[in-house]
Length: 495
Image (cartoon, rainbow, N blue to C red; front, side):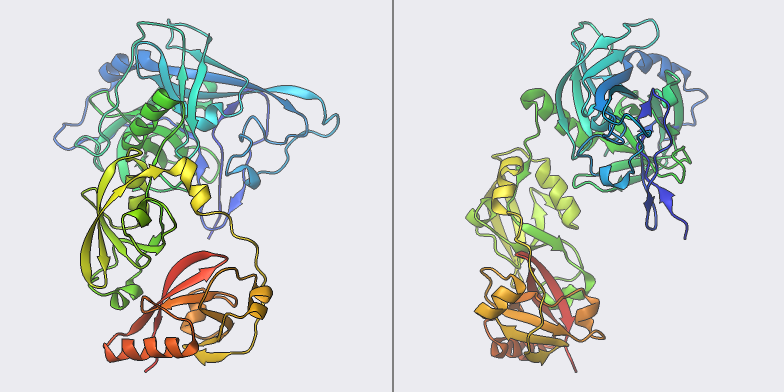
């Protein structure tokens, strides 16, 4: 299978080589999307997009940024410092005089959302910029300085403000409603390749796409997306913004009809917080979670299908205060049925800090209703889940069960494996042909629970196996910790 290239789509004003990085399997070109329209259900195929383009064009802007960089800073000005993609890129600075400073410029797009000058764009368009200038639709204000109100790197959204009044603006639409379904017409606008205002049209190709972010909820479109279009709007046929054009999937950095726009369902919440606080304030439940896999279904009482979010750890915080426990499966949060961890993270993150939320969990075969008062993720997460200390991997001798060699935690094993604070059974060896090996278990992992009961000895583990077999189960659910991080693994029981 051929590799594709991950390409940041800001348009540099200075001559430069195309920046690519090979990614195994497939690659995502982070870009500015200029959309192609899509027919929506209940609407006839439009004869022209001219009226819609004329209506919304005055609210779309070109954005130019400039940054003073040192010669040896590599791709800065194209890939923002600290970007999650920075490590993919090689040093592209020319040879000689690497210490001399220079000014790097880049182009992007944006759109006005209020008559008093608030403008939405992508974070990667303006990140690290010393100066941000906004150019309005031909005939409007040129080169207006913009103030950065706030950014959210997690969703790649930034909010700017210009000191103007009475500006034409557009409103957000509901990206989850009619008119934003797969097959509906959409229109994108922006500044592709620095060519100035441009319109393209297409359809909604897919919904709820995830690229690499925690809060990803992208609309996929076949609209043309190229460098310079980042931060531009994706419109429905009513002239409402249902997405912010952000990325493309491409082998060479050019549009091949697979573009992505962050949905307005995500963007509106982020923009409201940036305008009010200058930063995001996301709800925080205070748990570690993982997806429920099909092989876990038989091992969890009351679960019929692989759905929900399985709680692996509950540190001090909102969830613990509400009585949530490790092994609970979160099935409903604030009235929303939870299919997987991605959905739970997005719903919790979009909830206000301090909100009192009803949560339903599956525990020991019964549904339990809890009430959680949400904390704030930005301030609480690092305290609740500090980075684990590095661990060493060694393999002592021990008892063999389910393809695992197990030993109780001793002071010697703690030193050998860097284990801190866990009680349970240490995996000291693994049969490479066993199911345990295929499930990713490693020497030095600590099994703290089996069958959702704590294990402190090999005898405890053997008892859990027998109980599971007597109950007619085909697998046993284990809670495994690695470097302090917990996860559940279901292992098949030997006949």
